[in-house]
Length: 133
Image (cartoon, rainbow, N blue to C red; front, side, top):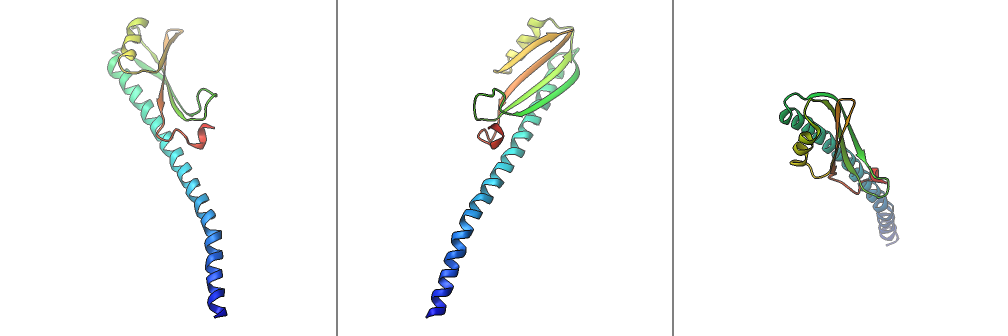
């Protein structure tokens, strides 16, 4: 009888120790998966923006692309996807602005030294990821 109780207490002890370790491991796995998915979404968004520019603006010449995944505003605890593309074009600024307005809700277009810089913001698949804190 004493051996039975001893085995039961060992099983209960192992269970008590294992549950927090399992939950912590699950949390880490979810955060890593979220990190990977958020960065993949940002890269996809940047590639789509680049393709949209090349398709919509005939004389566009891509100079540079930049992607950022994380907290872009600094005031909240969530993750956003930011894509910036610098391109050259002879298109007037109001025409270029109307092209991006037709497709993107949150964007900023600026012209510097003959080059356009378009910045768009998108939602991340895992907005509450640790990367946003």
